[in-house]
Image (tube, rainbow, N blue to C red):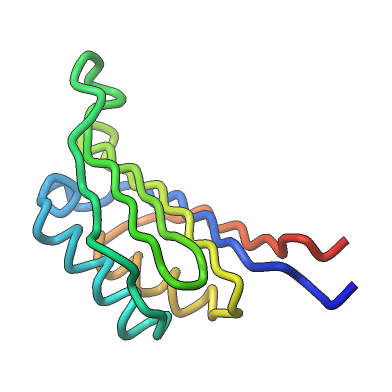
Length: 122
């Protein structure tokens, strides 16, 4: 086998700034900066940002999808819980530390649960 197929970072951010979680423009800017400056990966198409889950305050919030040439970035935000859940997947290696630190700063998160997975290595 030629090595891993890809790398995936799962970030659960807690005690975030509620205003950032609820601001579509800030979410778009986060994804743009994450792709262009942190990951240095080309965005493919427009970032999709949609408000979902309005039937239940626990699930209500934005969902974000951005395709990148090497895979995708997906996020689910919960202003009520003050939490953000991000998946960054790429077939090109990236720094999990840089992505985590950028997300912590952007969302002013007080806690993070980060898991980094090597995909297709076995």
